[in-house]
Length: 286
Image (tube, rainbow, N blue to C red; front, side, top):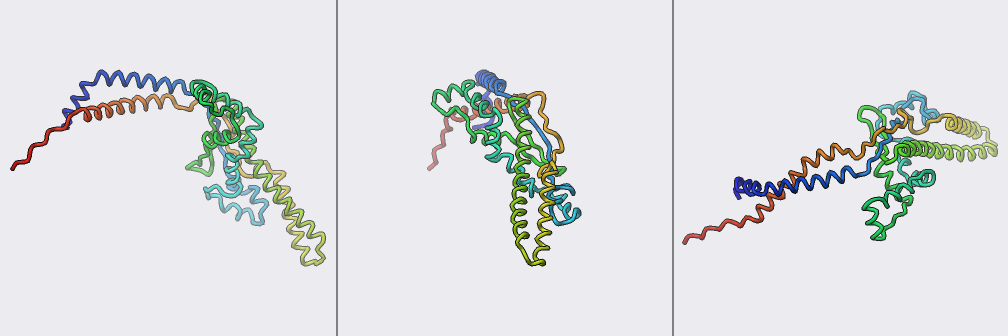
């Protein structure tokens, strides 16, 4: 079909297309405006291993200059990698389910509105459990690395402003305590074995290295119990925005204003092409 004929066919449908665009935009904009909004709680953390006085450096046998050699390594390694994994772990979900109202909030939101009535009519599960909390953390907790520094941004979305800040603080404290407990348990188990071995060892040449290992592990245990930061050093304290920003209504309405007319025009062009009968083919000459 020639382009001018296609454009004339679309132009003849302009009133219907305009009405369809207005109705579609009104409906889509109503859904965007009625969509529940969430607050974003944010914090900035940095790996403790990136500083020369990190716990992992103090409890190691290397010097401070050697321990700080990984300062420019931007990959999450060591205790900080365990910290990042613990933020979305099943243990973190169980902690939030036991100590906060997130289960009741998820259950209440499932039963609200038209979607809640549909779930109730279909007999779907309404009560939230720990798996739902972990799914929420995987979807709503964003952990992104800064492009200009060795810092990481933690962003958590939640409909309630105070709860969003409380959840982020609890997650940070839990991940930090998880790393500290793992290191302390490892050091204590090794220390008990070394002390028992040193107490029964009769060879003086074997006792001296054992005493050195005992002293090293006692120093590590003392550092773990005294330092407040083991895995992630808090660069910026957790804060929450004053106004909800998720979803971005202005951006969504603008995208709808651009995408919806384009979609309607493309659909109209396809309809014109389908309604136009194919041109008759000339008979072959003999």
